[in-house]
Image (cartoon, rainbow, N blue to C red):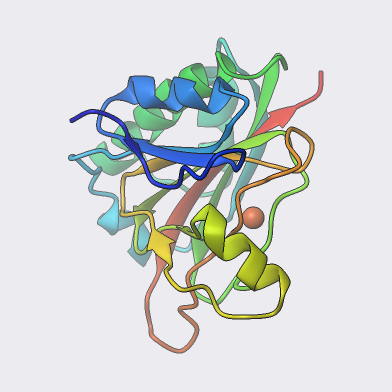
Length: 205
Ligand SMILES: [Fe+2]
């Protein structure tokens, strides 16, 4: 499939969706504020939902994340298992991809089990760029560029897009563009749904 430009009025930011990892490179285009790699395969981490895990938050070198990531997974109670191994391997692959896009030598890795509404209001992030994927549960929601003005005016968007489990999104924030992508966490409070979320942020030294 060719990459799909979801929103393309002239002089507005574009969101680009594709089925190959190379689509993520499009975030480096000045006019692109969201690049989505749609992945057909997901990792089965469901066994991790039954365990009392702490949220992961660790800074790792983008070129060599394994040692510090594994140490943090140990600290947070992730049991040695196939699910953990697959998760760690995927995170390391994504660190490598993300590290090629940012000028910082380190990446902040966050893994959170979300059961509430989290950041449920539409907003943009105060970052240069952020990688988000959801291994379990509904993914981050985002709006087309023509709905950005409606949200600024306090109106509901006409259409809400949502990442599927496994999809990888590179979200450009306020520190990189004056048209950051507007997004939110899906509101799941009270539904009993759980989300296992990975966020990668650029980190200083
Ligand atoms: Fe956000």
